[in-house]
Image 1: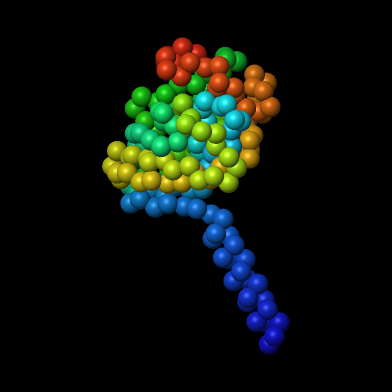
Image 2 (image 1 turned 90 degrees about the vertical axis):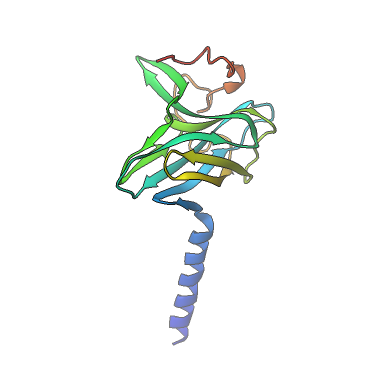
Length: 179
């Protein structure tokens, strides 16, 4: 009987531990799963934000904008490699969340772009971001800052798996693809 109680207690603690680590947000038919960002070097001007957005509804929705008090400007971006050239551009019409589907925001792909950071992001920090969806409305989530380079891109044109945003002119998008 004692071993059964011990096992049940251990199982309950493990379940609470998993629940405490996962941070999901629900808005209508949408679930924003594990939003996160990376810690930044002290003088970094930009950072990315990532999450999986699940849509359990029968109609597509669209992430149309994002804002954060941590940055001067926050946009929804796509990063891709076309003909060996890396491009990053703002999604002018936002990102579709397909009906009964998932949109994945991850390094090297779709992401939330924080520009003109007001302060460095440190590991463990919670970065608030308000996401606005075309149909579901608005929700504020907190992105948990992982270490610098966490789940970073392994790409030959980048330094240590990180794209150096400090030399980009984010105001004019001169380095971005226009298509």
